[in-house]
Image 1 (cartoon, rainbow, N blue to C red):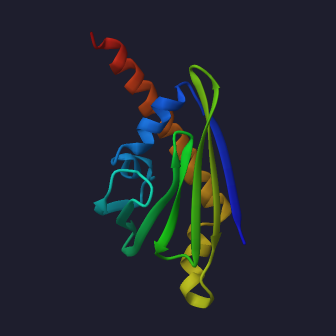
Image 2 (cartoon, rainbow, N blue to C red):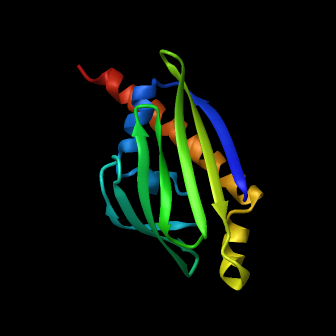
Length: 156
């Protein structure tokens, strides 16, 4: 079974990182172009919450239903209940390094469907593509958290 791990640090508290990921806009923000996300329904992140969306990879729609589990202050896992892969479990962990620094650890376990049905996920979820996707997510996360911190500092 393929596994992908990616970790990076942000200059933000674990609470700020958690709040960023709990925002229902996070999926749209973290999806790199040229992929387009069409949100059908996104429940606030909580144990058993469900997100339904379509990822448009060019003209190809990839419909997903993700269920969230193990939701804590230190992270959560989204599990593909319906979608293009045979299996997709993505665990987000928020590890405090000090009061103002958090390490975000991404761990994905996935399987491809057999035959032609799995060809698309073999390409999309190849190691180089996942590395590019998560590098984008790292940059966006850092940017969003930095701007949120600046905005919070300007408020009375």
